[in-house]
Each structure stands twice: as C-alpha cells, then as structure tokens.
Length: 181
Image (cartoon, rainbow, N blue to C red):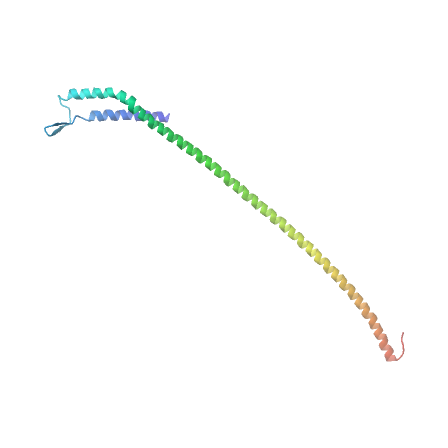
C-alpha cells in the first residue's frame, strides 16, 4: 500500500513539474539584440498551439515513456526491498546458526569440564586406593619384620641366658675347683 502511494505521488509530482516548466518557459526570441520573455500578441497563437500540442503529447508520452520508466523504477525498488528482506532473513538465519554453534561449543566445553572433573575424581580415588594398598602392604611388612625381630630377640635372649648359665656354672666350677653339674 505504501508503494502505491509513493508511485502516485511520484507521477503527480512529475506531471506538475512538466506543466510548471512549460508555463514558466516563455519563447526566447531574439529581436534586435534583446530577449523577449513575455509573449507578445504576435507570438500568442504560437504559444497556444504549442500548449495544445504539449497537452496532446502528455497522454502518449505518459503511456509510452513515463509510465514504463516509473514501472522500471518501481520494479527496481521492489527488487531492492525483496533483496533487503532476503538479506535480513539470511542475516537472521546466520545469527541462528551462530547461536546454535556457540551453544554447541558451550555444551561441549561444559561436557569436557565435567569429564575432566570426573576423570580427576576417579584418578584421585585410584591414587587414594593405591596409597592405602601400599600403606597396608608396608604396615604388613613392618609387622612381619617386627614379629621376626621379636622372635629373633627372644631366641637371642634365650640363647644368651643358656650361654650365661653355662658360663656362670663353669666360672663357679673353676673358682670352687669342683664340678657343679
């Protein structure tokens, strides 16, 4: 609807310009070195015939020249509007694609962060588990070593006690000069 108004305004404006130019333009006649701007009685019939000729030419010129020219201009404007609309639609589609792309990147980043945290948690649990196993193994070895040392100490004490008793008996036998067994 807006385009139709513009076409009508353009056509009426064009007609007014033609009429205004025709009426304002007077015959420029050279008469003895001077220019005559206003029609004289001699030039009035010529002016009227030219005005009638002009009025008769308005319809064919409008039909054959001005209307097709305005139609071409309007078609061009319609193509421009259509192209702008397509460009705006393409821009909106591109924005949607970019938004989906950024959303998918954001989701992928969040998933990667979640996976990294999960892998880190699993690694920490495994580390704690391995440390606990190693600690338990070391404590077992320490207990085994302590038991072995305690056993050997007990054996050494009993061996030393037996040897000390034998040496005491021999020393007492030697001091007393008799056999104490």
